[in-house]
Each structure stands twice: as structure tokens, then as C-alpha cells.
Image 1 (cartoon, rainbow, N blue to C red):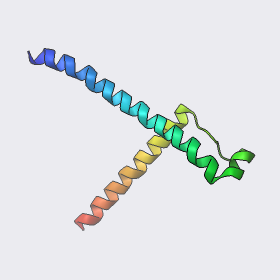
Image 2: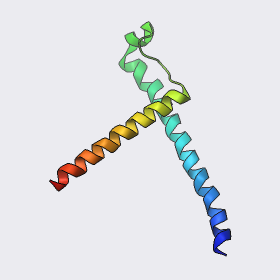
Image 3: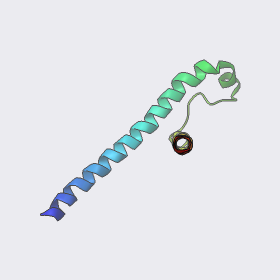
Length: 82
């Protein structure tokens, strides 16, 4: 009985995680295309900054943001203890 319950739940959880992952990448792509050309119009026109980014670049941005947020969390928790 427990094994059949596990077999039913695991694919659903994996689908939710994959959907959330794709949603985050889509959000990063959309926010980049929406904000960067407005913030840096001259740099986008000159080709110094990309006006839109690829899925792979969105993944890289997500990884960088995750690492920075993780480090900030570690540093903040260290300050609270001391």
C-alpha cells in the first residue's frame, strides 16, 4: 500500500518542481527583457548589454542569484549568533 502511494506522489512532485523551475526561468527572461532596455537604452543600442537573454543565460542568472542569496543568508545567520 505504501509503495503504490509513493509511486503516485513522486511523479507529481517532480512535475511541480520542473514547472516551478521553468516558471522561474521564464520570469527571469521576461523581467530582463522588460527592465534592462529601459534602464540601459544606450548600452542596448550599442550592443554592450543584451536586450533579451536566452534560456541558458536565464539559468545562469538564476544560479548566480541563488548563490548570492545563499551567501547572504549564511552571513546573516552568522551575525545573529554572534
